Amino acid sequence: MKPVWALFLALYLLASPAGARTTKTDYPACDLTAQHELVGTVGAEITDLQQAHIAERANILQADIGNARKARRISQRLADRLWHKVEGVRTNTNTLKRNQAFLGAAERAFYDRQLDSIAGTLCR
Image (cartoon, rainbow, N blue to C red; front, top):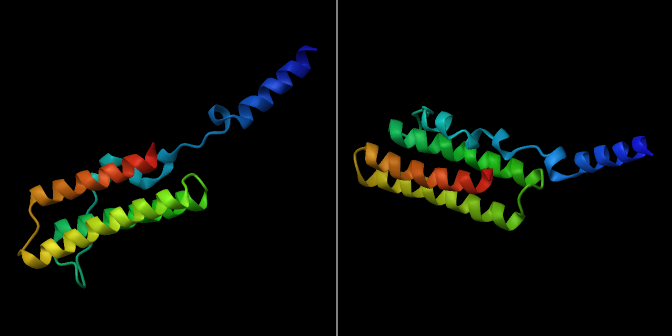
């Protein structure tokens, strides 16, 4: 009788979220320390290093949102909402850059906090 009980326990643990769980922190966007250290590439319409940083983070976050959706870890509704929030940050950054000569450290920190918040929703 004991081997059967052990088999059921093993199957339960493998099927349960605790046993079969793959963490969402596997996404690059979930490693906030690495994300804050990113250096984007300047070129084309991106002419500022701070703007390039935000663009690079936005690209990574949107890719992770797409991957999470494909893996069915998040709903389509949540994926759409997160995607649009990231796109809003990207648009605001580009608009601010067009209106100013450069993005300052304060603007970068503000947009980093917004992207951190979005990543927090994805990675929890």
